[in-house]
Amino acid sequence: MSNEGPVPESRHSPGDGLPDDRSLLIVDDDSAFLGRLARAMEARGYVVQTANSVLEGIKAIEAAPPAFAVIDMRLGDGNGLDIISELKLRRPEARGVILTGYGNIATAVTAVKMGAFDYLAKPADADDIDAALRSITPDHAQLPENPMSADRVRWEHIQRVYELCGRNVSETARRLSMHRRTLQRILAKRAPR
Picture 1 (tube, rainbow, N blue to C red):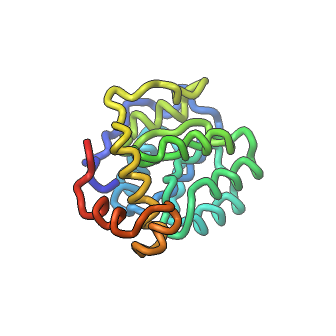
Picture 2 (cartoon, rainbow, N blue to C red):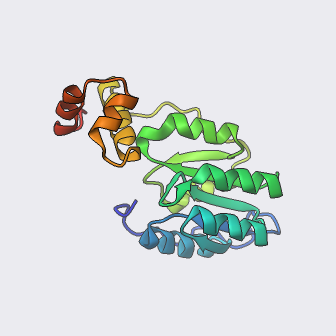
Picture 3 (cartoon, rainbow, N blue to C red):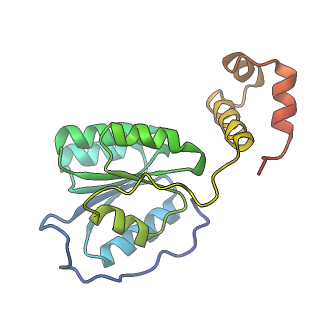
């Protein structure tokens, strides 16, 4: 998420629609993005706390469950869904928004089922995140303007399994029930459009 550019500054005054408790936890392992987003959300009236791992996010929720959370789905030490689960356990009315990569929309739907209020595809800017947090109803049923092709979805799935298997071709081929040479050919190609 490091290529979004600067996060725009405030377009809201501190008293425009946020509840009295404006606590916001942002969890992302991209420290540059985390810092930009934290500053932009503070300018929008939120009281921001940041964390860069699942462990830090859960500790922050245990100490003081926030009214709002923005959580990256994939973190260095695990899955953002663990943080959403902890947040919903400790503060059921909290609004948690999951940030997910373009190829992880199915996982994002799972996040909503587990208690996330909404999800946004990366790159998401502060205006999008603020709108999702303030929204009365989630807006996650829209069809993307340029949906991925079936070949691209397949390629992304293979890449994700490959990464989860520690870039081990043999293990990835076994888990995908695919011939090792076929997998090597797919991995050597560029991503389809």
